[in-house]
Image 1 (cartoon, rainbow, N blue to C red):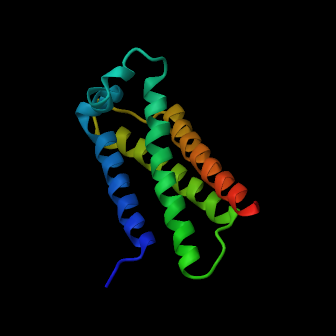
Image 2: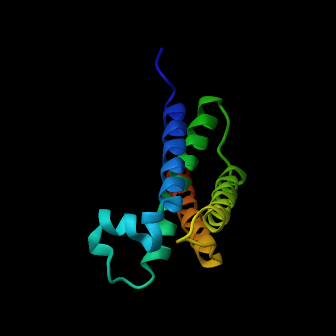
Length: 140
């Protein structure tokens, strides 16, 4: 039996969310260390840490947005702005939870409201992009 595309994306969303959690709670990932080791060309940019937070949550929001859109489509339903906003709120809550977990369970990381804002901004921009792109495509 072939898996529905939205289920594959749901599994990818979960895997990405766990990767983000691991990276944010990993002591060696402090100050973007993990990401900067993977992408050394990012060193020296201003606000790299905030860009990393926004990017990680932007990818999560993209995966969740497409999961929701494809699931709705498979059920013959329309993917609405309410669904899209739910993705942003879920990512914001997850990012906030990670910030709290960093403060409680790590010694080199702490909760920063600017990180939570970057998480939410990244998720919001990703959702706006996909929602606007698909809306534009369906209007034509």
